[in-house]
Image (cartoon, rainbow, N blue to C red; front, top):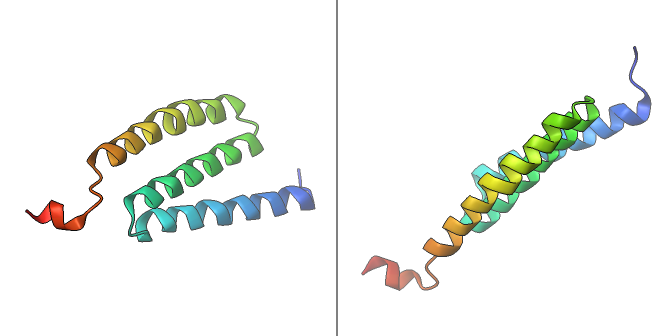
Length: 90
């Protein structure tokens, strides 16, 4: 069955969002922004699951990865963050 033009456009859009988010995770210098890019990437992957009619996998992607792992990373970043870089050296 051939894909409709709007399905192809939606796939291309979310594929670009996924790839850009993945590059953002690696290339961001700030850990907080890198964690936010990881959230964008994981949500975009969940949208890909919805587009493939795998709604259960999309729900598990959001609940487990975005809801669990990303929140754990966010708490770790918030608890270990140092405001003044001079304090981290000494």
